[in-house]
Image (cartoon, rainbow, N blue to C red; front, side, top):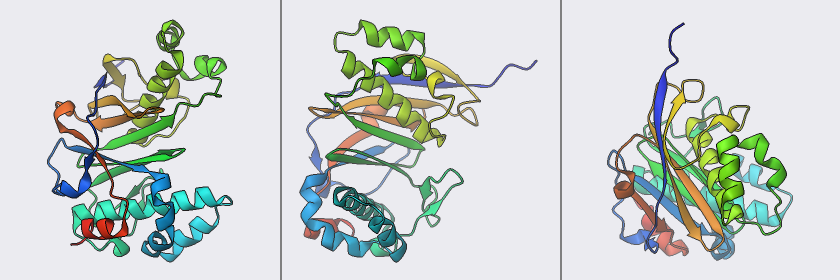
Amino acid sequence: MKNMLKSNLFISSIYCDDHKSSTFKEYSLSTGDVIIYSLHLPEYSNLTKDLVHFLNPEERSRSERYYKEKDRNQFIICRAILKFILAAYTKLEAKSIHFDYHFNKKPYLSSHPWLCFNISHSEDFAVIAISLNKIGVDIEYLSKDFTFTDLLPDIFDNNEVLAIQNAENKKHTFYTLWTRKEALVKGFGKGIDDDFKNIPSLDGDHMIDSKLVKNTENWQVCSFELDDYYLGAIAFEGLANISKNLVLYSMPNTMKALIEMAQP
């Protein structure tokens, strides 16, 4: 029997400096760059009446299917801001940006298929990651009321369970490992399935087989702290020195600044 093909995976934690203003960023990407934009969603709640005009009729109809106003506004904000970011990098008009979807429902730009992006939100924060390489991003709010102990055997292997159980801050470790797995499956385009438990999440070098990732791609995963009660992870295709290429920016929160950002 032939040996199953393997890919390399490196997992680590990084420290992100204070968020920089995206208005000072030159909107271009080099191979190996990974840019993460953060949004504190409450700061955009008064902009939803303006932002909704950047959605097409299908997207507006989708937003109206959300029963709760908070969820509806969250969709409008994240979708419109994503368009502003993509407009900045593609020089397209934000209103003209249209998404196509892969078989796994992951969106992409047919006009710029090499431009990869991914989005995640939790409670009051959202993040949008963009790169020329395949990426996946996940953030989670460290809920005080969430009891995770009973879930451990279903989503972590024995070593991961032990790492959580032996950790000084069990909740922090749980969310660190969880976001890493989430970011990876989003990067792979898999979704959560029976393989979720087998996806590595501990610090260090790992080998992953072709059952989990196609084409023997190499990946990195980096954990980062977004805010006092928010943890995130970014999965990035390639084994470049990601710490030098990974940058975290805060998005502007005024219509004037957003429009200036997206001007061709």
